[in-house]
Length: 129
Image (cartoon, rainbow, N blue to C red; front, top):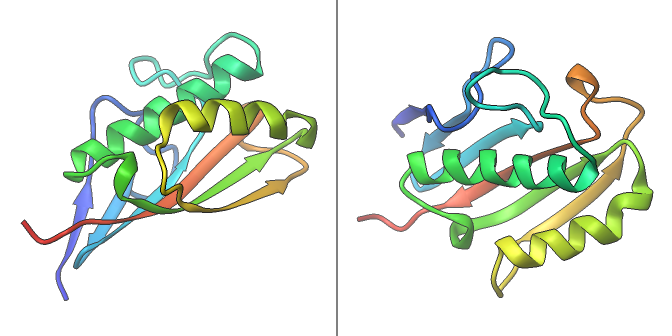
């Protein structure tokens, strides 16, 4: 099975020794995205809503660079420093995703890189084109 590294200039550069995503066959493994500004690589300013939206935008950019979109995401994992933001994540996720929604896990964590309050990663399956 061939592997392809996926990169998007519209998403932040990786902050460690990993790729934004890797495609193996029809499956694309999306690395975790935190609310970094793609141009500066710094954490965006703003409240948790702004952070969630930036993470979604970063993930979408990587999905598009791989030749897909949110409709191709089959699994999404959400990491929150404060699980009180769970309801807001659901509201915003419903704006970005259409039914059928991906399988999902939401986890409370003690901390995230660069002081982010939210991180998301996922798995996307693409049809052969």
